[in-house]
Amino acid sequence: MSESIVQPTEIPVIESVAELRQHLQRLRNQNRTIGFVPTMGALHDGHLQLIKVARKSCDVVVVSIFVNPLQFGPNEDLNRYPRTFASDVEQSAAAGASIVFAPTVPEMYPDGFETSVNLHRMGAILEGASRPGHFQGVATVVMKLFWMVLPDRAFFGQKDAQQVGVIQRMSRDMNIPIELIIVPTVREADGLALSSRNRYLSPTERQQAGILYQALSHAAERFQTGVTSADVLLYEIREIIGSVTLSRLDYAEIVDSQTFEPLERVDRPATIVLAVFFGSTRLIDNWLLTPSNSEADRA
View (cartoon, rainbow, N blue to C red):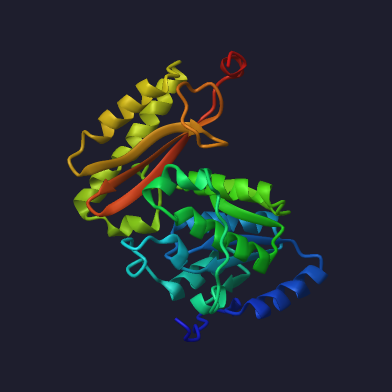
């Protein structure tokens, strides 16, 4: 893990925090705005869209590539998580990145490291309940990366809805002066949300995984016709997902978009969140539900 990373493109690939800070300080002294896109590599079009959006609003775009061991559980896919570094750097540069920050594990977590960031409630529900410790790992690495990069804006995908909520909550609680930009989910032709883990799916699993989009879009259509009962919408979602043979539901909930607490009725901005296994591959997705003003006024 400590071996030097070969730089395969013309944009700088920086491994050390000290070098990154020096490089970025020179740019700040030129009044350049800095955007930041944190990733774990294995880039797909969803990541590239984040970089492109960042490029449009920032003079400099830093993309981090770091497979964070703290956010993986003991029986999860840390060791087999896709690592495609050379391709990631090339794609980042083509999408508009200015710098790739690729720290090693010892650079991020030196000997004796023992500090973490823990969101006690939001980090323990839904994804946090299914993956204990996951959001502590996410919040810790994002906090460290924020302090390393010190960007003006940071860009995240809506596809990881609860992660977005955790980072927003952490940023509010800790008075982090970084503007968070949330970019809509990028989907494949059948609606499946792009994910680095999609490559784990067998051809049959991949074919059936499109049912997630069908379930979410069905619920959104039902909501638009006036169905606001979470129980009704969730029943129909579960029925649709259960109609394919290889799906195994982990959870499906309708939650308050700010707190991620479950709702009985969609009378405020809400998010459908779900996690479903296809074979050994676990996929997550979500859909935003926004009630009309009249519905919200009756709450």
